[in-house]
Image (cartoon, rainbow, N blue to C red; front, side, top):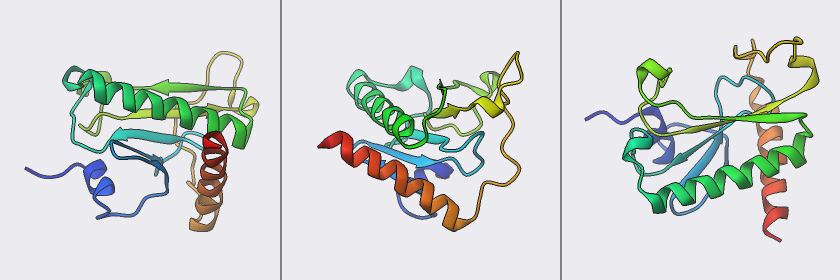
Length: 145
């Protein structure tokens, strides 16, 4: 069976801007962000969707979602954020490894009716992505103090 891209990231076979990691969970910046700071949170172990998620792993994943959300708020001061999780291709799941999108939302993205759901045209240079990664990690470290 082929590994998903998220398993490859968790196994360090392909690079990613990792902002949080513990024994169960990994959080990294989305390669095709919808906004500044868009981050994904996954269980390290391959779990296809929420239907296959056990309570213990679910609690650990949600704890990480909460921590990363607070760090994103502190780092970038968005007006709000979306936490999105899709299950199955009919619900727009494109990577069949459970993942939560944390998408900060800013004033300039609001059109009066809705927020944009298209990736930003350029995800940023490696240096820009490392700078954002550093800001998120710094805020996560301050949460642990």
